[in-house]
Amino acid sequence: MLTQQELVDRLRARTVRVTPQRLAIAEAVLNSTDHPTVQQIYERVRNNFPSMTLATIYSTLGVLERNGLIQELPFERMSRYEPNMDPHVNLVCIGCENVMDADAGQEAVVRLKNRIVNESDFQIAWQRVDFYGWCPNCAAEKRQQELSPA
Amino acid sequence: MLTQQELVDRLRARTVRVTPQRLAIAEAVLNSTDHPTVQQIYERVRNNFPSMTLATIYSTLGVLERNGLIQELPFERMSRYEPNMDPHVNLVCIGCENVMDADAGQEAVVRLKNRIVNESDFQIAWQRVDFYGWCPNCAAEKRQQELSPA
DNA sequence: TTTACTGCAAAGGGTTTGCATGAGG
DNA sequence: CCTCATGCAAACCCTTTGCAGTAAA
Image 1 (cartoon, rainbow over the protein chains, first blue to last red):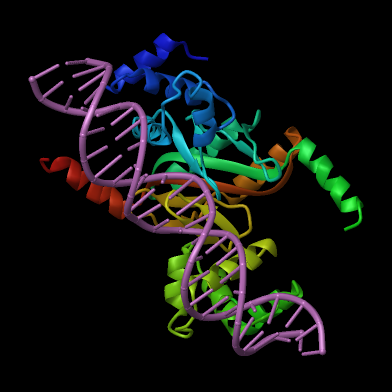
Image 2: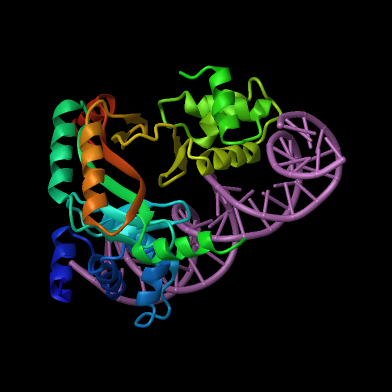
C-alpha cells in the first residue's frame, strides 16, 4: 500500500509529470490487487474527478506501462492492468472473470524464467503466467447448473 | 503434422460438422507453429477459398476452441490462436511480434500446474505462460538503433 | 429432411486520435 | 514560458451479429 507521497516519488523518479488525475489513476491501479479494467479504474476515480474521461485513463495507463510501473494484460473482451511486476502466477476465473495473484509459485516462476533466459536466445523482459479455471464460488454454481435439467 | 483424414477424424470425434472451409481453417491453425492471427489464417486459406470471409473464420475458430482443439490468445492488437494444448512456454518477441513455442520448460510448467492445483482452491482448466522479450534479430536491430543518433 | 454452416453487410464496443484549452515544472 | 496533460468528440478496427441461401449428416 503506497502512500500518495510514495506514488509521487515513484512518478517523479521516472520524470513523469504529476497531475491530480494521474495520481488518482496511479493509486487506483498500483494499490490494487484485483487487476482492474479501465472501467473499474474509471469508477474508482470519478468520485474525486467527475469530469475525467476514459481517454485520460488510457493515456495515463500508457505512461505508467512505458515507465515499467504496470503491465497491460489483454483478455478477450478488454485489458486488465497488473501492478505486480515481480514474477508470479495469476489465477483467472472463467466464470466471474476475476483475476487474483496466486499465493504459491513465485519461486517456481523465477526458476522457469532463469531457465528460459539460459536455454533460449531471447532477451526476456517480463512474463505473464495465467492459470485459467473455476474459483470455489463459480465451481459450485457450475455443479448446480449441471445437475439441474435444461 | 496432421493429415486431412486425421483432421476430419478429430472434428468428427467432437461431432463437429465438417465442411471444406472448416477443414482448411483447421489445417491452417492446427498444423501451424506460429500462433497465427485471424488475418494470417485468412491469407493461408483464401487461395483455395476466394469467397471465404472473416466471419467464417471467426465462427470456425470459436467451434474449435469450444471443442478444446485450440486456445485463443488475446494480445493488445488482436488475438492469436494456439494449437498446442499441452502445458508449455511461449516466447513472444516485443519487436516483430512473432510467437513461438520454447524448446525448454514443459516439465517445469507441468510441475507448476500441479502445484497450483494442490495449493489453490481453483479448478484449473488450462494455462498460458508467455515470456516477452527480444528475439535475436530484433535484439540486434534494437542495439543498432540505440547506437545511432536520434 | 433437418440442422446448421457460409457469405455478405451492418452493427458493436474497447481503444486511439486530433485538437483546443489548461496546468505542471 | 514551454511543454505536455486533460477533456471532448470522432474515428479506428477487430470482432460479433442477423439473415438468406445452401450444404452436411
